[in-house]
Structure formats: C-alpha cells, structure tokens
Length: 270
Length: 256
Image (cartoon, rainbow over all chains, first blue to last red; front, side):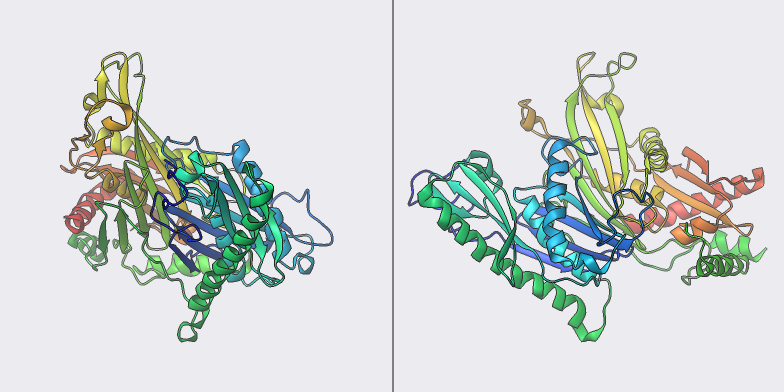
C-alpha cells in the first residue's frame, strides 16, 4: 500500500531518492559470448548475448549494420500467478524498446549483415524489470567484447501520493500514480529509453526526469564496477558464478567428491 | 552441432579417449560432475532451486495453484511439468527447440510422478471439484549436457519444506506438503561401446544413443527413456540398470 501523507517514508523504508540494493555481475554463463546477472531489489535477471553471428534465417538483416535483437522473457515462476511460458504482448513491446535502446550503444555499423542476440531471462520480477534488464544487457554486451560507444544505464521514477520517488517498488508501482522508466547513454547524457504511464503534471515532469537521469549515473558506476571486477581481478578473465540471494529456508547442497561406485571399476576392468 | 574441422577432430578425440576408459574432462566413465543446488532462491515460487551440474545451469520454480481435476481422476491433483530450452542456454538453441524440451519435461515428469514422492490423492482439496495443480517449471540457462538428471535433482530438492499456500487462496493456514522419498534420475550416453554417466553436451554430440533411468529409493525403475538415434543390446540395458542402482546410491549419499 502506498504510504499516506507527504512526510511519511516509503513502504520499504527508503528515502525518496534511494535506489533498492543492487548486485551486478558480468561473465556468469559458460556458453553465452557475454553475460550478466543482476539482482535489483528482489528482481533476479540473467542476460546472455550471442553474436555478432549469422542467424539461421537471413531475412531482416541489414547490409549496413548489425541487428540488435533483444528477447525479454519471463520465467513461469517469476510472478505470483504462474505465467504461461512464451511470448505475450507485454514481453514483445519490452523486447522492442530494449532492442532499440541497446542499438544506440553498440557500434552496429562495424558488424554488417549480422545479428546480435540479447536474451533477457527474468527469473523473479519485482517491479522495474525493464530497467534492470537494460542495465544488465549493456554489461553483457560489453562482456561479449563488442565495440560500444557507451553502456546504457537505466532507472525508473515513480509518483506516489504526489511525490516523485526513485525506483518504485512493486507496491508503489501497483498503487502509485505513475511510473517512468528512463535509460541513458551516460557519457553523452542522451536518453534512449523513455516510457511513462500514470499521471505526471507540469510541476513534477521536469524534476522527475532530472532525478531519473541522475539515478542512471549512479547505476553507471555499478556497471563499471561489475566490468572491472570481471576483467581486472588479477588480470585473468574467468567465469565467476555468484550464489543467488535466497529467502527463508535457503539451503545449498554441494557434491564435489570423487566417489565412483565400485561396480564401475570392476566392470571396466573385465 | 556445427561440422567445422575442429569440432570433427575433437569428436574423434572424445570417442577415442572414452574407448580407453578416459574422458576429456578427466572424469572416469562412471563419475558424475560436481553439482551445486541452491534452494529457496525465488520468493514468489512455492519451491525453487538453482542447479549447476558441471557447466549446465538451470532454475526450477514450483507453484501450487487450485485447479479442476481430470474427470477420470476426480480425487487426484494435477502435475504439470514444463521445460524451456531458451536461446540464452546454447548457441545451438537458435531455432524451435519445443520437441527436445517436451521430451525432457515428460521423462522428468514421469520419474517424479511414479516415484511416490508426491501423494496424488494428497493434492485433492474437494473431490471432483478442486485439487491442487502442481506446476513444475524448469528454466535452462546454460546447456552442457544431461538436462534430465539436473532437472530431477532441481525439482525434487526445490519441493523440500514446501507448504500448501492455503492462505494465498483464502483457505486457511499454510500446511506442509507431505513428501515421500525423491527419485534420482541417471543418464548414460553410449560412446565407443562404453556407457558413460552424466554426459556433457560434447559427449552427447558424439554418442550412439542415450538411456535415462529414474529410480525410486528402493532402486526400482520408475521411468526409462532411450533416445538419441542409438541402439542398445538387452545386456547393455541391464548393465545400465546395475550401474544406475549403484550410482543412485552415491547421489543419495551426497544429499543426506
């Protein structure tokens, strides 16, 4: 439920210009050419990049540049009611705006007649998935070693009880008055993702946009850190698999002993 | 599978090595890769697990939702198992993977369903009207072979400690879901006449067939599937069962 009264804090105790805790790791998958994993609040999102490559189907390729093809997909268990697997209108639209935003960041003219696939897998959704996905996707593209003019940093601004707040939570998103995801190229400050629904008046619009852009710059610092962690640790690049954050009842079982049932040895000796 | 010279050379090496009782990753033929299972990782699922088996990684999410029973089983719950072979998981998952995904989901489903781990009548809320639907969803993020065994491990362990979410559906307090012993699924690939446990994607690519067995806690076969355009002699199948029984004990030992 949205907080009542302008002086009260937010439902999760954050201040109005506070972003939820974020963990961002680059280079977390074996097969993907580039990858990133982000936890943003309770959002858990994995991004894997393949390409530039020749796709199985050639139609739609551009003779002058690469096609950045982002696919935003939600796991059936990522939301409270099971989501039927596969595409829907929402995921198609998000895939499109993310593709377009990322096209701005990659030097697509260097890779004509190819496709760069950006696969976004939302494992748990908790408001703000498209901003988290975009933030992780540009890190995954950098991790793939693609030539880029910039990263894309993203954060949403919301309106709750007439107040402009940063990075609305699920409650604030559901019961608030507005939500505006923003994505920027941090070096130039240009906006490459901008959507909005709800109600935002003339006395709020400018300050909301300014607050969002400033938040994107904070996100950019986290993206840089993630890439530095990936490539500057003792100078060696390797796949690091950080554990997922868990909830009550979390347990980790590890089997790494060398045990082989004796029957194998006996039968192989025969 | 790409057919470039390097891949072909490598596949020859993989086969030759297995013929001498060795594998490219240093394992013996009957050795499973190390695995890690993190449970309780998805807050909005009733049960969840992230499984890493060697280079294979997948996330399992379990949801319980009231639904209608099948007319021929009015007092039993409904289990629905689905697996997504997502393009994120492998460069070869570029096209439509629905057939492959469905086979894995159905084999894993049979192993869980027939192992006695879940009491189907225990999922009944009101006979003929309302039962629990148990939705088992497997999301593959990194494919390096043997999705069968990793999926069963993930599903079985994600359900530990799971409760019927009665409160979410206005049906009173949450109560624990009674669970029997879990099944263990073991997959062998046949390469150069040898059976190898827990094949990698590369080993699957050079194999002359695959056999998957799900065993219950007594060592009884509860699901079985031959696959991968290969053929097995009756002796090879019997041998696979003997190997599966002893390997299942090793896996159960590490879970205890």
